[in-house]
Image 1 (cartoon, rainbow, N blue to C red):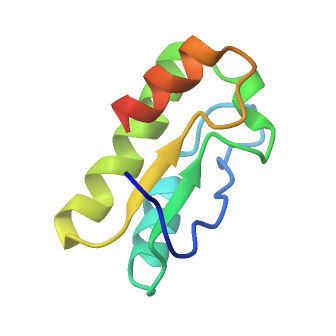
Image 2: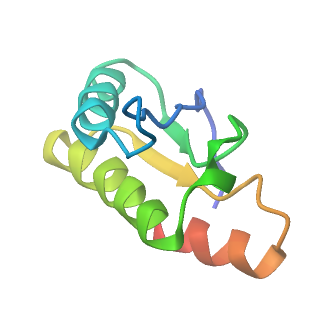
Length: 95
């Protein structure tokens, strides 16, 4: 599969106490999915992925996949900045 187009890196929003701000993430993904981008880089080079548990990472991916699916627009790509090749491939396939 060849990816073409623009895939901006999205940050993962947090509340001040460090919890995931999933409603804000949903808002951000929805807003980006209304633009002509090809997709979004989730849990990638913005650095916050190291602060998330695997369960939190799955929640972020769930939101990133479900929101654009409603609009049949752009798609997320994730895990591209992970050190583990196995984790990187599994994460990309899940998204």
